[in-house]
Structure formats: C-alpha cells, structure tokens
Image 1: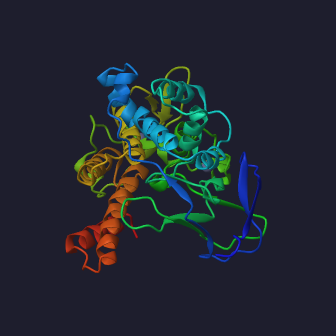
Image 2: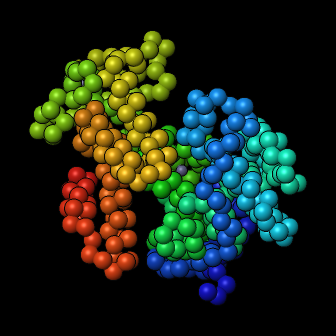
Length: 367
Ligand SMILES: [Zn+2]
Ligand SMILES: [Zn+2]
C-alpha cells in the first residue's frame, strides 16, 4: 500500500501512538504489516530446571502471562538473528518492565551462557509487543495503542497457525488527528472494567486510560445473584437458571465495608456479608471464566471442553444473562466460527453441527 494514513507521535494514552493523518472511512485498510520476526512456540522444557524451580512452581508459571518457557523461546529467537535484525527488535523497547517480570527475565538470561548483549531489553520488548500467535511486527503495528473502545481492529491475514501479515482496518469513520487504537484483549474486551484493567496491567504493564475505563459505572462484573432473594448453596434453583424466574442481582462493593458487608439486597435491604458462600462462589466463577479466556489450554479439544463446562457452570451459578455466561457463549461462538471459516477457506462445506451450535450460541446471546 502507499504510505499509511497515519503519523506516529506522543500519545495521551502513554508512550507513542498512531494518529490518523486524514479522514478514514469505516472498513478502510489502515495498515498491512508484513514485516515481522516470528517468535517460536515455547519449546524449552529444561528452562525450569535451569532456574531451579519446583514442578509446582513451574506449572503455575506456565499459566502466567509471560512464562519462563516463552521468555526462553524469545531469547533463542533473538540470539539466532543477525545484528541488524536484533537492532530492529530492540527498537520496539519502550523502557524497563516492572519488577516481577524483570527479575524473571534476568534469571532466564543468566541461565543461558550464550545470551547475546541486551538480551534482557529484547525480552522485555517482546513481552510488551508480541502479537498472537507469536511474532514481533516492525512496520507500525506495534505502535497502535490499546483502547477498550477501539476505533480499529487488527486481523491476521495469514493462513493456519503460523504468524503471517496482520492488517489493521477502521471499525468506524475516524476523523483526521484522532488516535488509532486497537484492542489487545480479544474476547476479554467484553469483560467488565476491573477485569479488563487487571489483564492489561498483568500482561502489558499499563493502566488503561481509555474513555470507556474512565466512564466507570455499568460494571456488570460486580453483580452476582442476590443470596437473599435466591437462597442456595452454590447453583441457582433450576427455574431461576432457566429463566422462568428472573434473576435478582446485587452489586458487590470491593473492598467490602469495615464490618465486612459487600452488598445489600435491593428488595429487602438485607446486608450481605462478603464471606457469604453463594457470593464467594459466584465471584470465583467469574474469575475462572476470565482466566480461561486469558489462557485457554493449548489443545483445541481441551479448550472446547473447558468452554462447555464453564458455560454450564456460569449459567448455573450466575444466571443465563450474566456477563460471565455471555462471555463463555461468545467464546463458544468464536471457536465455532473459526472452524466454519477454516472449512470455507479449504473449499469444504462447514460441519452441520458447528453451524447448529453457532446458531444456538447466537440465540443464547439474544442476537
Ligand atoms: Zn480501557
Ligand atoms: Zn435480594
């Protein structure tokens, strides 16, 4: 494409960002970044041994956003590059990463006697800039800031699971001078504010300063079925779960008040204690949904099985219209559409079951 319709300059969201240099119409191609360094999939089973970590600690680390395994794979990719490419990689570096990760990076670098100079800075840059499935993009893509109400979307143009070019398109009309933003959150974009912000803090190390986060309010995640209106152990009564009776929600305040009260029933005014079991269970299910979306199991079969289980659990504990339940329906729909897409790309008829399940998910989401 001709020179892209944006300029890169300092951003109020932090660091630098890309700003529209002219009006952009909805759907317009903003960038096609095909200049990337692939990052290998983690394949360093010995890294935990070399770091002297117990198997339990290793397992916990594997589920974290930047595992020692992925750091070790970044390191071997960096070490294998010619000097000029290493410089380009390092040009993505935007300063030091916070302490827990920088300590882990230092340990991984120290455990590799062949680590090249500036390896720690390279690993920090990779953690902040890698795009799934796993590559560093060098011609503009990495300079798009995140917003929870993005005006652009990025799309993988490659086929299969290997990294390929990524395109960026405008999601709506964009005025000249407006900052072009994308979402780093995948499906978690539809999660409520506190969970979105936590994910960005943990994986990308920034406090989201976007307009949607600034608005506050409407925080569906802090709602759970009222334990007073729906007395129960864990699951909602079947007639509530299947929507014959409407679910009454309470808003949970965090942290609870000094006397441990987290909410009050909007009907009876009864104070609901933070340790009340249905409330604790519902909060735990919301967290589980979110961490599943952040780190689904690598095998598609396992991920799909977890989707199904969590969807049923969220619906039973939080109700069929709760944001956690809707997020799991979306995840199931997303997986479904990917399979349908793959069939279509291969010129095959999509699986009828996938289509039926997709329609079912749409129905659940009220589309
Ligand atoms: Zn935000
Ligand atoms: Zn109530």
